[in-house]
Amino acid sequence: MLVSVIIPSYSMENYGNLVDAIDSLLKQSYAEIEIVVVIHTNKELYDKIAKAYIEQSKVKVVFSEQSLGAYAARNVGIKAAKGDILAFIDDDAVADEKWVETLVNTYKEPNAIAVGGKILPIWLPSKPAYFPEELYWLVGVTHKGFAEDNITEVRNAFGPNMSFKREVFEQVGLFNENLGFSRQGTRYIQAGEAEFSLRMTSKFGTGTIYNPDAIVHHKIPVSKARLKLLIKRSFYQGYSKVLLQKLGPAADSITAEKSYLKNLLLKYIPQRMKRVFTGPNRVAQTKQLSVLASCVAAAGFGVVYGHIRR
Image 1 (cartoon, rainbow, N blue to C red):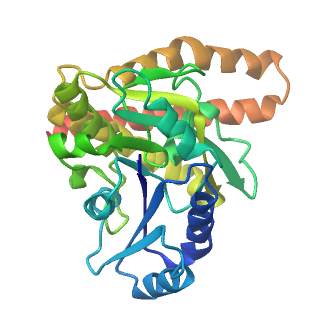
Image 2: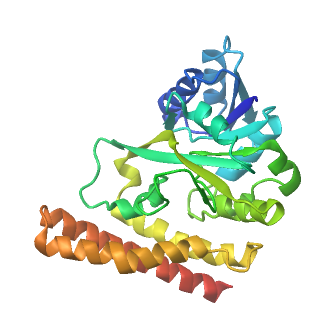
């Protein structure tokens, strides 16, 4: 099967990361691969990437003059791709050498129509001491409690590491372009993967197969891990869940979030409170617990705000 891997990008500042992402795909153990790079608004970046990979027949570079959000850019890539399987990775991520091979092998599972994998962080320059693992989802990394560490079915995978059979898009449609980060970077709505996966499950009766051996490494600079930004993203995550409830085809479209919150309140936060008083690195544990509580509260305010607006 031909696998098309779609990478959206737009910033010249991210050129080095984009090259790393493309090069990691060119080194895949699976040979039948097409790399579709979707660049919007930045002609300089398009020209530089097109020139750098002009001799690579596996690399297709697509340009859009229109400013696109993440999901709109992915939709452009879907239309340009020729693969039997369409996979997605971010322009600041690098794929494990056997990533595509593992995805393809996972499609041999009965009824598998979508496959995602684990996203591990590359902290630049290092992980902030206050950042709890339970909040990794805020920066596009697989968080503690997401799924068991084996092959299992989940509602949806995350943008830097997800894939679908072509027939899913043919029968379900494309990503909802209004459920992603705004083009101006002023809001952080993020419900596109979940909403699309709910439509898929409603149509096909099955969700996404999660394989933790399909690994992508996501670069997280300190600018994305600042507390103010984490609070803002948490607020919009809460708001996004209200939108998901409104738009999702399922009667209870946020079951995954309810399960996560239950584990957080009954398991992870009590464990952290205990470590604050009895464990090592008490200062760091106190900081992480404070950040965790603050982000949960911010998400709660986002839910309230979403219901008021609705």
